[in-house]
Length: 467
Image (cartoon, rainbow, N blue to C red):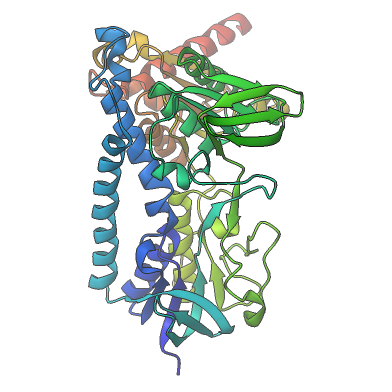
């Protein structure tokens, strides 16, 4: 007899949803997490605080209103870190309460402390005072998440040389900043600090940024960021970061030297598995701390599951939630459909990027014919009303069966807007549905109809030439 039917290590999006799903199925469930980390990395240092910070930046700088009220428009002239973090603290506090309440009302036991394996069914939980308690579980779910990877050659001081965790607790808004890494997190923070007026330089080893996105969309974002005085140094490697009394000096292997108030490293993520004593449960992690799983999120030990960022790609809060639910259903012998291949990607840069399906380059490489339909925000009444003349929506359509092959969006509300395309693609709908649909006016959703008409008009031209 075990203490619990399911024991979950970690209370982030994946762990929380696994615990609640199992509890809804009538199982005895417990969650183990540090008292200051209820809700996981996503809630405390990742998704929620960074997106709340972005919202505070947009509101206080008045950036999105400048096309209407002039380039000097600002809601607050001198924006302090306290201004930014007040909103973040409020949202995180509320969300922690929500998570605790959800666990409580579903009768999920919450144990405060850090967990490590004693054997494949037993976890030792050590609380803040050092007291240890043994818990056993018939099934165990590892949902410990990740932390920012830190190069050994860089000396982090959390004040002038930071990662994406410590940047949230910086003392003041830097006048200038170097961001190392042009991945999703690097670009999101680059756009936020640029909007605040910091002079940002992005250093990236690769020749470009966000290479998994549509090329035209990335070009549009790069143009907007350059407009905010962001400098890009692609194909460059950092040789050293020197800390001085008056700031930092980033030295590149090419010999360039970049002075700045602060440096932020965004060099990928590392799975938080080093303290779990995985070997005692018969498990191993790779060099990035990730655990291998099968299609049901089972590890090499069948009654132990792993979900969320700790299993690697796609490492998104949204997919982690679904992985947690899927793992719990499988452990409880409950039928569950596999996670759909069509998953939206959202990048909270300024402006936002979101897409679903394939890109033009992917379709071209696969020799799949497609037609393009584009709608630009500047031609929509809603775009003029909110002051976004730069956004766009792009549909990639199959000329054979008229189904959507990809939807790519850039601009205000992109991460919300993408779900219309997701629903149409998921239900096997065609571009003709969007042509015939009536959308509220004036809305950004109307861009689907405009882009659909653009695509069908192009296809009609080709058809007429063939007649």
